Image 1 (cartoon, one colour):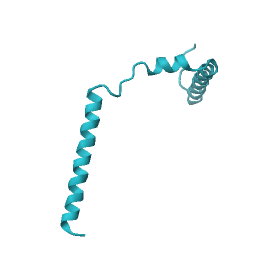
Image 2 (tube, helix red, strand yellow):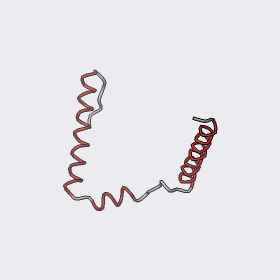
Image 3 (cartoon, rainbow, N blue to C red):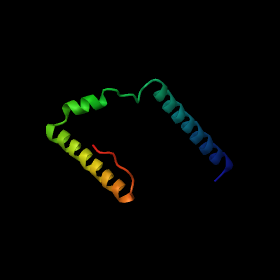
Image 4 (cartoon, helix red, strand yellow):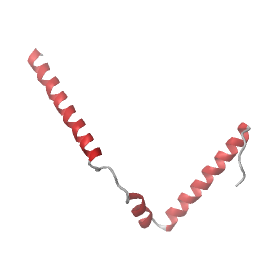
Length: 79
């Protein structure tokens, strides 16, 4: 390849990378990624079965952590 082709590829990739970084920073500063209602709307439209499954998974996770602490000899406060 000629040197000018490599130079064009480097300059184009640098320009596109800078544009992508600028777009990301603009999106963060302007709040494009903030979705405060996401979790509330998600819970509102979930079925009762899905919510019950999530609760049971949290209980199982807590039980597993308690068992792990008991095996490691750490103190686990009572519920």
